[in-house]
Image (tube, rainbow, N blue to C red; front, side, top):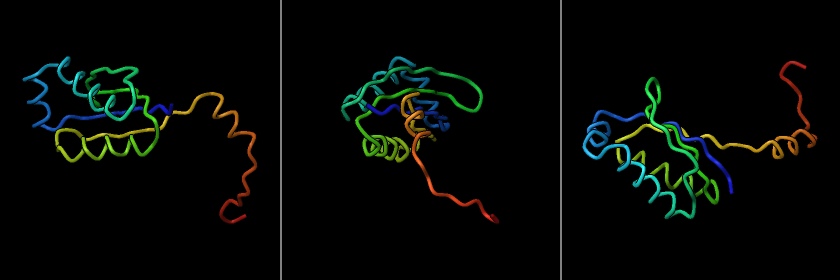
Length: 106
């Protein structure tokens, strides 16, 4: 199952909601969304700095990730970035593929 790194920053309204329901309430909400799409939450951490929340999610496919991302962003409570994560085996397979490419100016 594909893995995705989620980095999120709460908006002021989202932060107010976090203060009301706490971290465990947000964990439940994330798990409900991900489980509803057929996935699991591998890890979820709160942070401070540029990102307020970091998660690693296992989801069936990119379309499921896009559905979750669109729904969360539409709420206006978070700004998010989703990065597909590759296994070592996937990168090894990619290094064995021939890709025709010509750099600009060459």
